[in-house]
Length: 94
Image (cartoon, rainbow, N blue to C red; front, side, top):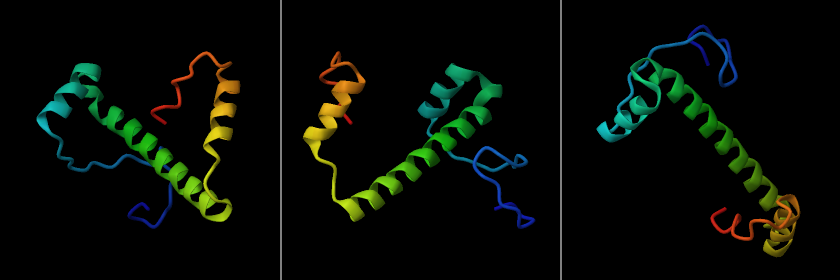
């Protein structure tokens, strides 16, 4: 929520400066990727992706609470169909 009471979805609204603490190694890795002037945009995109993941985790938890957890065999079969069976290890880390 903005200071004036207006709500904005992630990625919308005016920019606002804040102070963020990062480890030296993380900041160095970001700057190597985007340069000094790209750090804010990089962190904005990273925060938006994290919000999307958090929202998805909440949806999955709500679904699991209502319907029970997904059947691992059914998930593996659907994953194989979506990936044409070309990557049998694709879901191992998921």
